[in-house]
Image 1 (cartoon, helix red, strand yellow):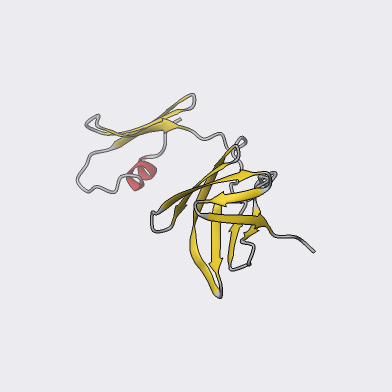
Image 2 (cartoon, rainbow, N blue to C red; image 1 turned 45 degrees about the vertical axis):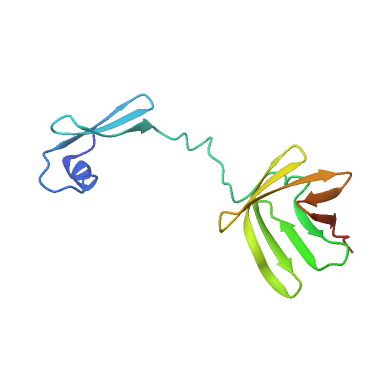
Length: 137
């Protein structure tokens, strides 16, 4: 399959370069300039196998709201791998991403600060904090 010269030229933002060439072999795509210089190589995506990261199939059991005993700190683990932590009246005091490996959590806040946590017997031990599942009405 070859793209038209117009499509290849549109993919080539550099001025003064000669014709480009686009080839597909199976699932491999290659785009080269007229002088043979490689521009892009890669595999074609199988769109049927792709799924959206915005809609998780089943949220992880640790997803949800965790609070300190006095309710001052509230940390919500969102199903998309993000967290939002409130402190007192300060909403979204800390936000960032987290990953879960078994019962261990690794946090990276949006400023680059890292922290860890572990869930044991239904309690989240996050650095020096002890957080409990928020009871649902």
